[in-house]
Amino acid sequence: MTTALLEDRYTLTGSALAFERAQRVIPAGLVSLIRRRDNQVVFSRGNGAYLWDVDGNRYIDCVMAHGPVLLGHAHSAVNAAAAASLDNGVQFGGSYHRETVLAEEVLRQLPYADKVTFMSTGTEAVQLAVRVARTTTGRNLVVKFEGHYHGWIDPLYVNIPGYDPQPPASGADTDGESTAVRPAVEGAAVPDGVVITRWNDLETFTRLMDRIGDQVACVIMEPLLTGFGTFAPGEGYLQGLKEVCHRHGALVIFDEIVSGFRVSPSGASGLLGVTPDLGTYAKAMANGFPISMVAGTSEAMRSIEDGRVPAAGTYSGTPSSLEASIASLKVIGSEGADFYKYLDRLGSQLKAGLEREGENLSVPILVNQVGSLVQIFCGKDLDTQSVDGAYSSDRNFVTQVCEAMIPRGVYMTRKGLIFLSRAHTADDVDRIVEVFAAALADVLSNQGSRV
Image 1 (tube, rainbow, N blue to C red):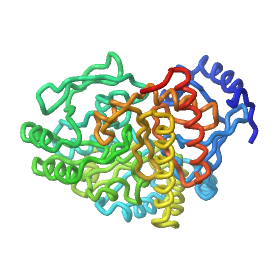
Image 2: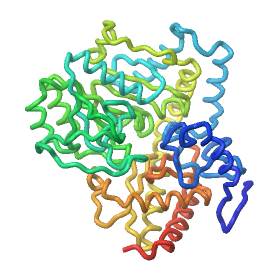
Image 3: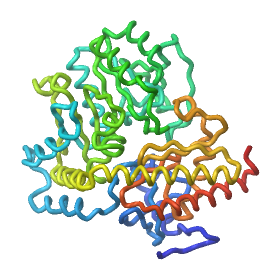
Image 4: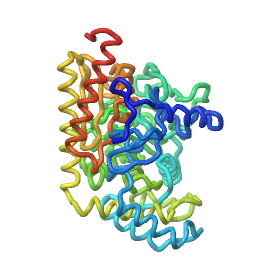
């Protein structure tokens, strides 16, 4: 490992100079504000579970591009498949013969779906799914849940309290069934056509739909809360919600941009045993190459089929991304169930280690874990299986600890959400836990003991 250490921490001189240069020509120096860190690292390369910055420091990567890099950086089979496609051209402006190959493969893994179409980003997939639902049903209202994240588009970039980099927000129920719509961007207008309600509360949802259900085009949710929280709803909730939606003629959209192909071969729908009418997928499909997908039943997708919704995009179905996705799914499939069992073992090991170090230092660290997704919380008596409980975590403290891990060689998200990959090892997890303990002790020493 090539490092420049100062009191057991990396120096980031080269990163500081590179970031200063970026700030002169890029707003805030970042092309995605979610990449903001107090210790702003500028990377030069990645391989397997590791990243290297411009100073030559090596990091265990716990971000993995915020979810897409499921197999590890620079995976040879995936990169070779994508690179080989470039010899035949980058874009054609027409059908590419391998689109069907990928569509057939994902449909084998998503038994609820009859058709799929491809785009480039998760936000784009969500936008298309909502448009399809509105056109298919001939209705306009979209029901969204408090705390669920569906990308940065209007009208869904609302009611995501505390979602980094947005500050925490609070609001009271307006009628016992729905909540005031709160844009996540300061000064933005409140969008029309969106209703916000509480997740994991079937009684409240049923009352809401009894009142407005005949106007609702779709209900969109993260079936496994991954934007912040990493937990599933109570038993029977998703099935009950689906039955209520269908009783009123509304479609169910599962946003599986993060969970799709990461938590099981068929994503959260397969893990939880409930299927949607439409699903959106992206991050774990192609090991970092830009691709997204909307999958759905024939009935739900009929407005694309008959041409009323022009699903279009110059970069939709980019050949190199299609080939990367085909190769990624082949690698995952070659291991079968062992692929996900391995990730779950790593996640369980990490959860146990993080909570143990919190206990050793008398800090109320709680951790949610689903397979390779691990979320850190801090607070006494938190109900980490609820949205309100998750957002009651001392997120400022968690952020300070995560930031303190970066110059010690573990690259973290600010909100304490960790993405593990097939390239991580048990030794990597042990090292992450060691660095977490050191960072936790460091933050405590600067703040005083934590009760």
